[in-house]
Image (cartoon, rainbow, N blue to C red; front, side):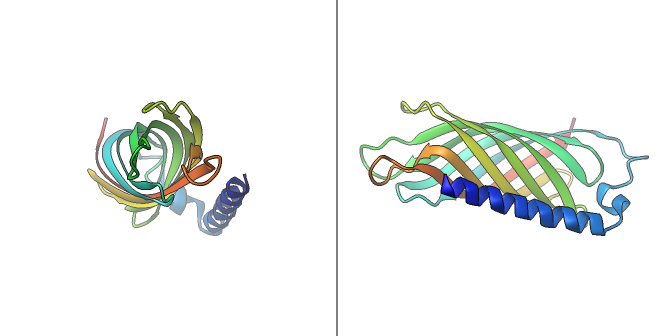
Length: 185
């Protein structure tokens, strides 16, 4: 619980700094000129590989689909789902596979190609007898052009077991790289 409070405090602080920065600039330069911009949907398919910070897990691997609605040239709403597997190297302990479902906000902050992204959602465990559902918090940064998207993000899974010590404490963090192909619908 202490870890979750720390993560929430960091998220609120980051949002405050970002909002202050946005308000300090001209509104049109961040929001973009929506008068002549065709708002619409994009769809992207990505692969993810990650380093899991908990000792029992070796690495994470997954695939996802992201639906993005462009509010303006520089801001978008996202909905992401897919499958992620956390691989365990110890014998006798099963891997943890789950389906993440996340909603987020994406803002291009530099040259309409570099962005920040914040997502929140749930992870539904579906493999090897795990039946937990977890809160997912996921801030990230990335680069995108018309078809390619590469991002680096931190994901925190609040309720999944760490598989360490007495009582299998909960809370797993990972640093993940996502490479994706996207297109306009």
